[in-house]
Image 1 (tube, rainbow, N blue to C red):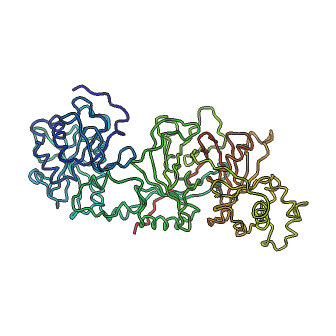
Image 2 (image 1 turned 135 degrees about the vertical axis):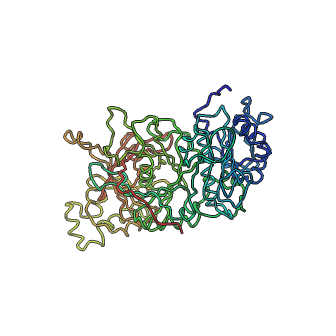
Image 3 (image 1 turned 120 degrees about the vertical axis):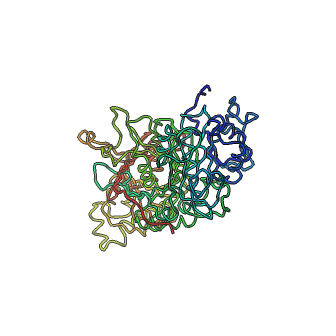
Length: 607
């Protein structure tokens, strides 16, 4: 039969779902065309398997291919009204997608892997025996069979662990001819030897894969990391450390039992699930416990969203390729177990964990990740410097460090009104926090600054006072001299929460002097310096705050007339943040270096 032109994106158009009774004629058509007459199952046999073992009969449904001559069921089309997810959208059960079935896998349960036992379905059997793994000829050798088989095994694992089966299954078995052994081994099966079962004229081999038990799943470990985000690679121990925990799916769901009856439709449990549903309470409680154990300012929890479609607009500066990037959910928790909506340095840390293993010199590699936080869609990309280029900020040569760009929302700064209740109260708050009650000898502290011995003299260093969008942060721009006055002083952090005009933190910043001829070749040029205090979220002083640069970048970009600015956060650890401004899109591309300092396995079990 003539081979059709197979698009590279064909797998993106396939839905894996349970076979319905109306699909049997199409399945039999494929079965009869694919196997010798003495090996092919009859239509009545397929009907029996679908009726008695429906959850174990799944197919590959190609959307939008119903017009391909000879590929459809009788009538040229196949449709599904099952509860499914397609291209990131959860479909209404009443909706119909037009297309055709191009392959299927069917199996029945039995108590022994023998020909007689495999003729009927025994719902108490601990062995799941696959009878057919078949793909229409035109769609072979393009990854459909592997994708369909891997979906099948994953779906059976979920049914075995999540479903309410009276008797759990122990393994999946099948028979294959010698020329297909390598295919099944690549897809996770183990060859067990020659089969005594006679089926047709050729010799068959037995293969199997073992189900993981629910007890093993409960004790499953998760990859975990500590990453220094926005690190200055010229300085060890810099950047803002964040914890990262990599999960297989939403916490709390991997071992939860559904209320489905025995052998209920897996299609309703699998394809009908939405990636957008909230995390279960037990999963939230577990993340809080783990975040407290990590004891970092923030810990990010990430898991894949297989049905989620990433935004089509390029995120980065400029986009390096147009490949479809995988989607991950991300949630952030503080060391006290409090969830926060967005955290820049934890996002950078999470992106580095997923992207660092990529080969940056391979243009075919997908270097992008899309994160879906509670209220934001965030795109991240591993930056691959063009040949003979010089990055704005230093790049580490270690295989534990990488440079990543993130697409964050643009935030403007709105000036605070002058006078009482506004700028005057803010200045009073700053002077009290840095020069106030915490000092045993206030006069002695002031005299070290020469002329700056009064509030009015300090006030002359204040260039701007404003709040970011939503009054999230208070931004205070000082002269360089004024910024330096505050460095090295003990801070009365509680005093920074006196003014009630912001909800999160206080940003203190200043523009930087251009580099001299002697330093410009050895030191990265810094456009601005900053510090961040978060009294309203339990942070005294943050080492490096990526999200604060959603406003710092645009502020100094506008002030300096530049589209790319670099900031140094002058905390004890310190760190570098590059901001590439995209005003026409209302986005800020935040670039930083991430250094993985700790990696291991998390063994705190779900309760």
